[in-house]
Structures are given as structure tokens and as C-alpha cells.
Length: 406
Image (tube, rainbow, N blue to C red; front, top):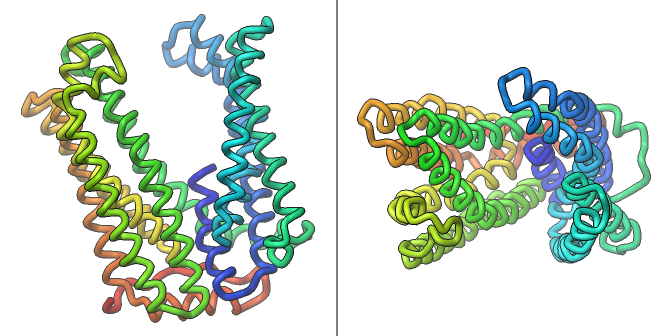
């Protein structure tokens, strides 16, 4: 859902920059329709998840309970299909504060609702799933209320029309590569966690690498936010026909990314001897996590930079190139390096993590080449043509040209 909705960063961002405000609402409705349709087969898969887990050899009792839990998350799935396009709609207009307040209100209400449903009813863990669904839909209602009442959205959001059901292919040509960009990257880390189970002392290895992944995921949210801001500024400037403004936005956001990477890695190194205690009280796990901190810092630094570059690529409409980059970086380079270091050279969990970190570094280098050697004038021309050319159902998304000089 997150990956597919990222296609709106290009479509809505460039339309807003070109002052074609009516297109933002059409593209947002189109994304809602598409993501809701995608949610249907996913929800059917979730209905049978308990049986599927049993079929692949998981504990029958745990599989049954996991299946019950995920079934009650289905309403949250459909809420996400609506909320993600709404957030991209607001993001493309730089309306960030309303989303912040909505998220904070949702969080503050989620905590007591979850506590009540889990501990004050007979629902137990099912109450947690219901609380998530309630919170997600509450967030949707608050976003819709703001959009409907705010003067900031009067020109950009209109009533639904049949245009939302036409031109879905235009959205999908950006949505699918956007989803693949995200999936290729995060699936590769899941592969590393699975591979850690094949090492000697798999309980320790899996626990430590899961902790490493939790840490970089937490840190990546900062880079993702900066990248989203960069995507908005770049797409707005390209849609406005201002290539120099887009180039300047790239320089500014990358400066912020470098600063963020230095601060975060410095903080992690400073807490090297205590970080493990944030996750476990087991001395063996704590010592292993502390020894992994330098390697975590390498991953965090690479992720901080590539996360922002990925946002810039989305703003340019280069998701298809980003998908190829992530496929090659992690599956043709990173995972093979992990296998070599972890198993052949017998470096264990450190080797697995070093290998996937090499994939992140390769990803950063390739994305840097794509962004910094792009022909910004041609991308701006293509953006304007995609916004203004053709009928609403025929307008093509920007497919950036990277063959020119910076």
C-alpha cells in the first residue's frame, strides 16, 4: 500500500507545481479505487492465513491464533487503502501539519482504546487488532474532515467522478515500480533474517540481526520523511517548469541528509556500549548487539542517503529505474555478498549484515548517479508535457531522462 501510493508523489506533486489543481483530486480518487481493489485479494489471503501457515509447517495452535488476529486486521487494510492516497494528496501541497495533528490524535486515542479492548473485555489479543482498525479509520475520518472543511484544499479536492475509474493504467505505471522499489529493498533484509536461522546458534543470530533491523528501520523513518519532503519540492518544481529550482531542492535536501546521517551515526556510536540493553537483558545478546553497532552505523549512513535519493527519484518519476537499482543492488550484489561473508568465510551474523550493507552502499551509489547525472531541463519539459498533454485518461506520467548532463 505504501509503495503503490508513492506513485502519487509524482502525479500529484507535478500537477500541483503546474497549477493544475483539479488533477490532484482525480488522481487521489483513482489511487483510492486502485488500492481498494488491491486490498480485496490481500484480504482473501488473510482470511486463509491460518491454514496457509499450518500448511508450510508452522505450529497449528500458533497458526490458528495468528490467522484469527490477521482476519480482524482486514478493516485496517481497507482504511490504509484510503488513508495513504489522502496523505500523498496533502503532502504534494506541503500540508504537513494537519497530518501531524491527525496522527498525534490517532495515537493518543489508540492507546486507551487498545487497553480497554485488550484488558477490559474478553477479546484479548483480538482487541489489539480491532483497536488498530478503529484507529486507522479514525485517522481517515479526520483527514477527510480537514480536506472537506479547509480552504487550503478547495481548489484541489472535488467530488468523485467517473474519471477515478478511467486512466488507472496511468497510475499503475508509477504505482507498481514504486511498490517494487520498496519491496525489493525490505524483502532483502527479511531474507537476511531467514538466513541467520541457518547459522550456528540460530536463536542468538536471529535475535541480534532482528535487533539490527529494528534499529535501522527506526532510523530510516527520519530519512524517509526527509525524502518525502525532497520528493514534494522536486516534483513541484518540475511541474512548474523550473529545473533550476528542482536542482537546488536536491542540493538542499541532500545537505540535510548528510547532516542527519552524521548526527544519527554519531549518536549510535556514542551509545555503543548500552544500545543492546534497549532490546534485551541477556548478556550474550547485549554484547553481540554492541559489537554490531559499527556495522549498524554503516547501514544507517547508507540508508539515510539512499532514502532521500529514493524520494528525489519518486519526485522525478524515476520509480522504474529505482526498482531496477534495488533489484540489482540487493539480489545481484548484497545477498550474494552476505552468503559469501556469512557462510563461505564463516563470519556468521556479522558477515550477513556486512553483505547486505554492501548492497545498501551500492544502492546509494547507483541512485546518486541517476539523480546527479539527470537532464533536469528535459525532465522539466517531460513533466509539463505529462501534465498538460492529452485527455485526463490519456495523460502519461513522467518517465525521467537520465542521459543528459547535470
